[in-house]
Image (cartoon, rainbow, N blue to C red; front, side):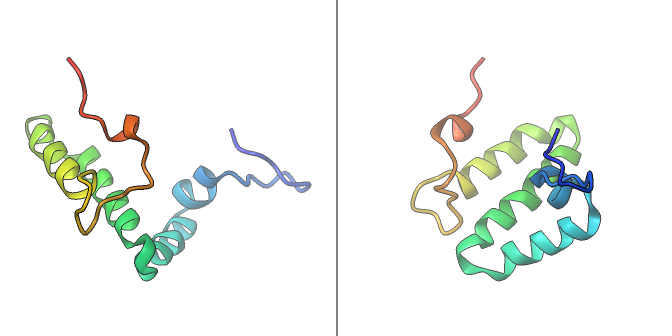
Length: 91
């Protein structure tokens, strides 16, 4: 759950930028419009596409995500992510 303002309005990032369609659209446009955040916007789009893909396609899609966004030195490397969040799954 997020934090509520005095009027009871939800103020969490998830509510404002993920759950609310206009907030999501505006935040995505912000990410895409700022060169330093463009990779984060592209990663968000690709993760949403990954969540919608068929089970048979998931492994190949995950490999593409890792090489595109999690490989140091790449043009779209998201260096702000922790090592734990970018580590390949075990098992």
